[in-house]
Image 1 (tube, helix red, strand yellow):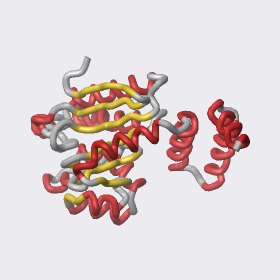
Image 2 (cartoon, rainbow, N blue to C red; image 1 turned 90 degrees about the vertical axis):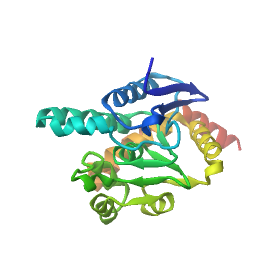
Image 3 (cartoon, helix red, strand yellow; image 1 turned 180 degrees about the vertical axis):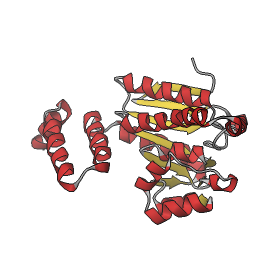
Image 4 (cartoon, rainbow, N blue to C red; image 1 turned 90 degrees about the horizontal axis):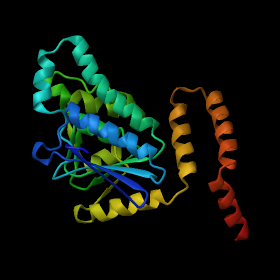
Length: 252
């Protein structure tokens, strides 16, 4: 079905693997289209509770494919906007997905690859992983991902990352808030699988409502956010998961 990614499911987890290890999983339009399709398929799978995004080989994703960069330099503004919008659409799909999406980052996550990781709801990394937005070094801007990065780290941290193009370690990325957890390299795969399984065991409706409410609050006033919370609170009480959870709690 796919030529540039791998897709499999099991245990409530949909696994999407960028599968261009010979290109360090560089992004081109075909790969992005396949990831978009797989994300959509996972959303329609009633058994799916978590989406796990990773990269084959040594690196998560090195950013845009060099052939794509060359094409960009020769394209007009409308073609470039369409090209950029393809990636923006993927970020929006991930943001609106009913399931939490985890990025499992080994090796390098750079430029668009770092953006793809940051677009996930949770980023887990191996201790030796590296993150960065080096676009400034070729006079380019990590434009779409800034909408996500600005919401993930402080304003000054976001500016330093995009203005200097510095490549940072997993430890530094954790300190900045770019990633949520990092693990020793030799334990990374086991820890990621364990984390994903634990998340998949949680109430699907509660996690979905929590994700939706959290991101809806981005542009809300305090009063509007509270009102959205009131509505979500009432909806959550009516779900089967909540009713069963309350019953189990009371029996204790």
